[in-house]
Image 1 (tube, rainbow, N blue to C red):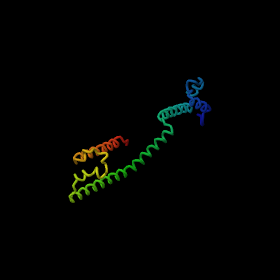
Image 2: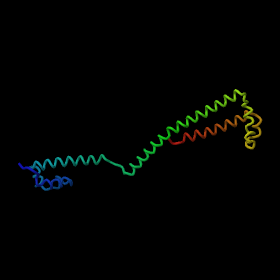
Image 3: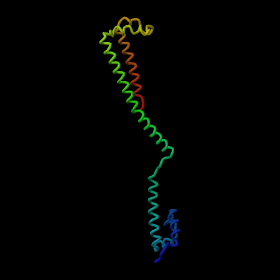
Image 4: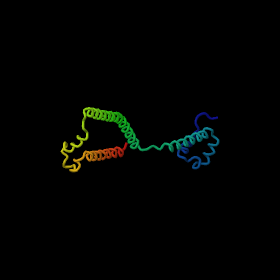
Length: 169
């Protein structure tokens, strides 16, 4: 019984590390390994570690550092945009509610004073000096003015809706 390392363990370890065991080694070394317990254990352990290393290297497919950095920056920017967008959306909704409340309050206030809506809309082209843009026949009837205003409002709202729908979020 021998204590300590076998003198051929280093040679055997190098052959296993290079992948030359057992095909590219001498017949004498194969017989030595069959008789030496330390060398047999070295072969078993080195081959097991080699298989595990190959499996681990096959699993770890890392991308380039530039791609990882770019993705991290993109995530950080998107998170910042989301944090900023939440209060802005709340402020926009609040502003819309305030504007609608002011418009309703104005309409109620004017209706209690007996405001003549049709007369006001009839005088609108003259008051805004838009006579050059409005056909002469439109100034005769307030209903034609309503039609022109409603078409203009629909065109503007359609443009806003298309813009909001096409915006990438």
